Length: 244
Image 1 (cartoon, rainbow, N blue to C red):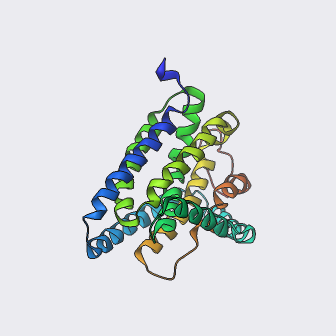
Image 2: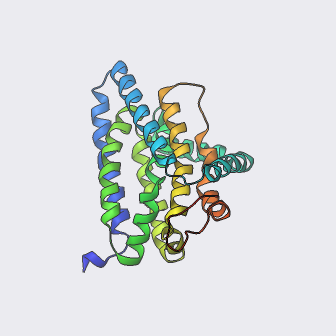
Image 3: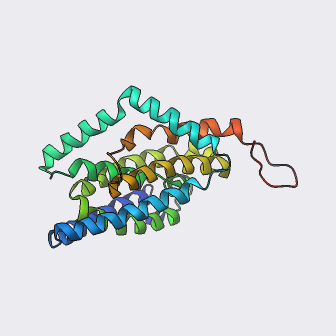
């Protein structure tokens, strides 16, 4: 049965991002520079608000703080920003992309792949063939892709390939990732770390300061689940979760 096929959620998400980006590119051709500037500011505000909302999921602010700082140091040390820029430039050259191609590819890829719906949706798809969460995420990403592509260009279209690879890998490794997805506290801390990265992206889109290299902080998404158990107490038998 088609309902039992694996990776349906990831394929759907890739399709919606692709279609949304194509629509956005078409809309963007009819927009003046001033309209694109206004649209970019609006997107930046929404992304920043999303980042704040995600950060507030934390149960102990020390966890995302350590994760983001340590993740940023690790990312800078290994040169993750240089690697991603080189990859984006390679793709841009192959596709003859525009001036904002790299920014669009990296920004859209991070936004579409960061967040609890990615982990939880892919795990459910991999283990239960349930694409409910990914179907909802696909709708959101498709709408977002329209606006991103209209302002940032063809790089957003290329981000569909990143969604396919990242979500496909998470779905493939759903079984070992299941214990993580079933611990709300740990998911919350990883979400909070992702929220800090989303806020930085929003600041970049708003042009409030010299561009933050948001990609160097990506290791925080993996550090947060490792750090969380050290700071989060187990819930009492009859009570609620507590923080250290």
